[in-house]
Length: 112
Image (tube, rainbow, N blue to C red):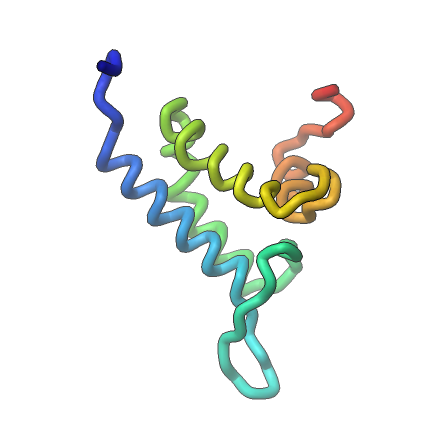
């Protein structure tokens, strides 16, 4: 029996927000046809597309406070990052993880 019950409401909210982040990152706008198009998730990169950046900033404003809870970091965020790596390759080969890590002010060399 666990020492405490999982924070179910926060887990639901964090998973839902992470789903929104995945959707934004895996969708692009085809300007010629004026419609949304799915992108390959293996090549997720944060480009300077203003709509994407503003949308992600809004989602992160709700997601970030939840990451103060260790349970949610381990259950939601770590599973998301590990799922990206399941496709194979090293951490350095995944642009999204590189950009998230760089934007946090860290470097892989400092972790080795």
